[in-house]
Length: 429
Image 1 (cartoon, rainbow, N blue to C red):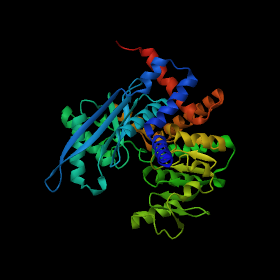
Image 2 (image 1 turned 90 degrees about the vertical axis):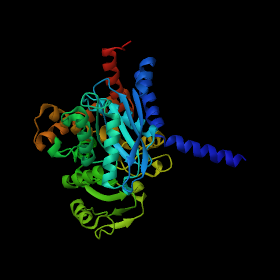
Image 3 (image 1 turned 45 degrees about the vertical axis):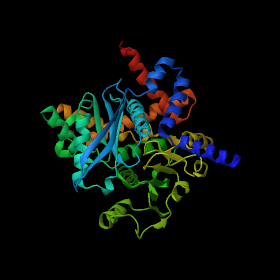
Image 4 (image 1 turned 180 degrees about the vertical axis):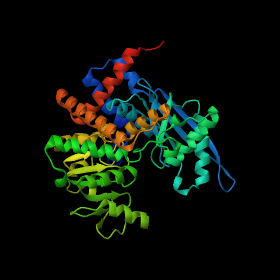
């Protein structure tokens, strides 16, 4: 009986550790306490402003009707319109979307752009749906949300299993409801529909910029820095490619179904060409195949998780051998793992800073759409570098001033900025 109770308790503890909403709440609470934030204001900032649940009927290709559940959570609009992606996945939950929306609030505040935080998701499996079914699902979901989104209300973007085409469908559907073309309703669109140059590579490029900044602080050299990247989707592949081009030695790529390792370094451009030809990275002849997850704890200088949440947790954090953790994904590290990494002396570049390149260039796209004037890619990249470097320096300075690790410093900086805006505005009653 005691064994059963112990097992149940252990299972509950693991579930709580992996709950993204609880993870962000724990970090918020610690940062708010260190800031001595007013208790009432903390209650406001801890809770989402609005949570929308929609049940979307879609006619499938075989004629039957299916109903899909979708979410849109708007966490804060104190500093500007909500901003955040939409993901399509079978394991989407309201808690996950809540957490991602709150992270967007703090992320936008860390890089000091005039957006709040939002996020959306639909419970579906896009791998088994046709393009027509996905289009009908996207358009009906957009129609259900049309009164809650818009250039000055809430601006969606791509996320897991969504892309430029999905954004084009959202923009078109919203525009049909508004009776005129509204390009600024979403970001991450195709260039021909008001997208921004440099947007596709922006999150990966932001990771490169903050890694460069960390090396400068620690006195390291690019060519002597070994990198392992987890995830080879848009963020991971672009980060790996840009790091490789900059002179870093990318020694491992860890995918959801297995990894590749070469201690001498992997030519990422060659690997990307192989994937284009073969449709997979597996079988690549210039690297050794390794089991999934093994590379997370392999020796390296920088570990860059760019997959999903909760990849680094209490059960594996103690085995990490990286000296820098650059979080390309949202929420890849649990609070329990944070404590272990801190004791190991790992230099963490937290997600709300490390992967903020994407939302920063999304902001540039929104600005360009509203101006009707578009920038050269060199201008986009220059402005991105300026914002990411300044934000990295702000977070590190905050950490040193308040004697906290980088993640809590990033939260403190972000919460301080949002709270300041709310105090200036006051509470409408």
